[in-house]
Amino acid sequence: MVGGGGLGGPLVYALGAAGARVVVLDDDVVELSNLQRQVQFVTADLGRVKAGAIAAEGARRGATVIGVRARLDAASADLMLAGADVVVDGTDSPAIKLLVGDWATARGVPHVIAGVLRWGGTVFSGAPGAACFRCLFEDAPDDAPSCADAGVIGAACAVIGGLAARAALALASGVHADAGSILVVEDLRRGWAPRRVRFGPRPGCPACAAAPRPHPS
Ligand SMILES: [Zn+2]
Image 1: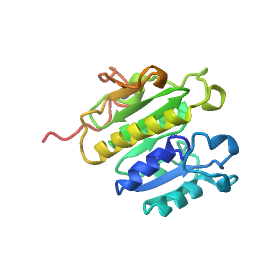
Image 2: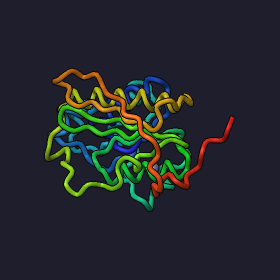
Image 3: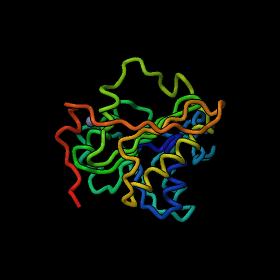
Image 4: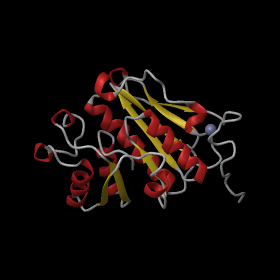
């Protein structure tokens, strides 16, 4: 799991309770303004490293959660992500989302890329042979509103984090039916039924055109 914040909490709760061994990468510390949406932390955690605090919370609930204080970048991705059965991004960084998608696509690792903003969010599922995250988003936008600027409703983190956990568990179980699709929750205030958008590989996509394909069975 990349990111131990607003999506990281619901993800750790759901994945840990399902028996998954979770490694969380995050380089941030807990701040007061996080507590409204990062339900895994309490006031006693203020100033603590999120990776350590989320691991402690996982352990308290009997889950196997390992926290690593690190910010993922291109140079560290092989070291940090190698060996994962599924990689889950729950960061608020478009650049890291593309990095996770590119890394996982190039190595044939199933992955989930989840994002939340204001009252809604998205959950992308990827696996070998399916369209990748970069087929949909060619590059990180220059003007994307950040969570800090635009705000995130706590309940939206719970919904999107739960949907992301469900997607990760499906991939971990070998169910790739949703790969190459993105689940969209537009606005929780207008009913929360998500919309699934399926798309095909973009011809010439630099991330997946030459990536590993599934072996014919
Ligand atoms: Zn692609």
